[in-house]
Length: 442
Image 1: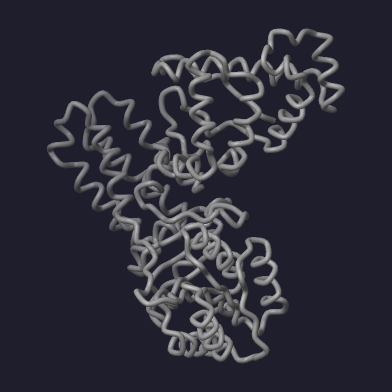
Image 2: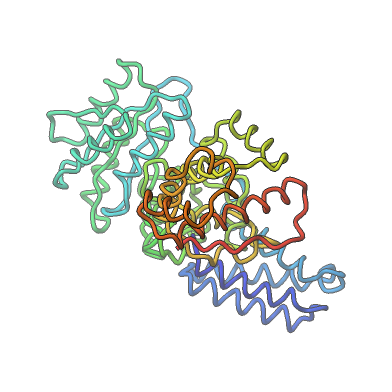
């Protein structure tokens, strides 16, 4: 997520931390590097100008320059200003006191509206709500069928109409939603390759008909400044209540994330962090700022873990780690839990890149390797999974044949299991002085 911007800013601030004392020249050089990093990430140039000017003013203050830890204070200032730029406090979805609450999804064609409609419906469902989704896109071939396929995949009802009038479809869906007891209606509207009068007139008529609680712009983060420009125009015509940024997990420069709030004043409410339907996260400005600066996002990681983990099983594993009884069977179960959290690279990106965890973000991970590891463990006998020291050369050859993997991979798994076991035992005692083993899953 925002890898280019993140690595550039971290490198710049790391250089500053290497200085015993920080002078005005150091601050000026750092501000220049930050400005270049933001511009290369496609952040709006006016936003960059104001952002760097504020940073420079605060960083050159007497309290910073005369401090015993001026570099750390500058880093804190950068982090705080990033949070302010992104919106400071998270802005949750608003719901009507009298259901149904209507959420109208708008945006350009190709921004990911239909998929995001499904993601938002699944998110609402997991929060205990009863959503209904409907497509009013009667122009794009198979747009309505696409939403129906998504609805079946996530087990969310989709309203379908015989009408070809988008406004009438929205009105029928709203009445159906109210009559059938659904508390949320998500309307997937049509998009265009560019903003035109016909599109905006249609959207305004739909909005007047159903009076949505939220009008949410779905914007593609990979389009950079184009996303900001379209957000400005949609906001001018539609009075947006929020933005959902999609494809933030891709090779995006990230300028849209840092510019949209500042340019439009519209809060970012969700970010898309993957292709799966559960890859939608409420937007927290402080957490994204932490990820950008390599400070990690432990809170989001904990929330993901809580959703995926079984509390009783987690306590049992913790007890085994403390007693040094963590087996290969437990190792396999933990690999399965990790897969539920999402892509490995995304998980590693949430860890703070400091101390023993420094450098983990640069490792290359192959998701298939987890499947191979599980196959290898499944090819062991129950006794071998509990007592790994029994696995000698002949047993390793048998396990390799049974799993269809080379002996070298069996050796690597056992080695990494032993390393992981030592690491977890150390961490359970609160000792973080030793470096983590260098896993290379590829």
